Length: 77
Image 1 (cartoon, helix red, strand yellow):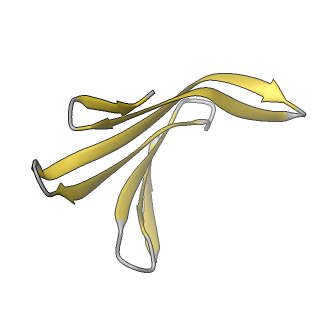
Image 2: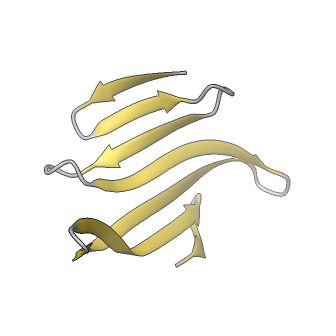
């Protein structure tokens, strides 16, 4: 497991070898996660999940909108 931090981005490798990038805004809130994956019909794809519309709930800032895309196709909103 490892990680490398760049301004606004952290590249992470999990113990089982999955590589992903955590994207943050200027305040450090996560705005998204990106990873590469294989899709049986599309081949190699980028899967990205974007977090937005943060609200404070019981003292914790939580995204109230989560959108996931496979390449350019929205798969969850």
